[in-house]
Amino acid sequence: MDHARRQPRKQGWRFVLLAFVLAVAISGLVRSLWIDVYFIPSESMEPLLGTGDRILVSRSDFSADPIRRGDIVVFDGRGTFAPLNSGKGPFADAVAAVGHWLGLTGSDTTYVKRVIGLPGDHVVCCGTDGKLTVNGQPLEEGYLYPGDTPSEQKFDVIVPNDRLWLLGDHRSRSADSRSLLGAPGGGMVPLERVVGRPVRIIWPLDRFAELPRPAQAGTTSKNGQ
Image (tube, rainbow, N blue to C red):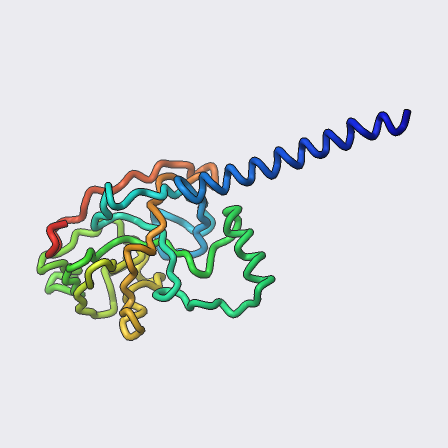
């Protein structure tokens, strides 16, 4: 009798385990192809995105829908914003990867910034009015953190083909392309490193909101974008 009772229990646990593995596999497939969840670990994109926000990110097809100036993008910063090896060791890296995959922690190699310069753009800080200029035209930046200037750091860059110049909205709190001007690559992020675009804040619930794609910031690039 006891043996007969144990058999359904074993089968029940096997079904639960199989269902869990299947759910994880389907979730992994969806997140690798279409949509993902990311944790915002810093103040660099305030006021739009705050520390601790979880955002839903669409893995867009950028060949069909090219990145525009003013877009917010999530990207892999390895080789540009982040070192190729975190140096924490395999176990710590594995734990960090699980936390990142679950949307519970940030990533040492994944960043969220706003596109200021497209391939071919000439980006300068700053014009006589204190604004950034792109291809000689002042850039209107209504998304900046209140009280911040477009940049305290001066720069004059031409964005190479297939690269982006990226800045945070909270300029005084953002480590971005400006911070890497003297590094290899000059803070320019390859287009192929872009993961996708944020489409919604999903946590905390009191900040649950859509993140509409902004209208393209003024001026045109030398490539006509």
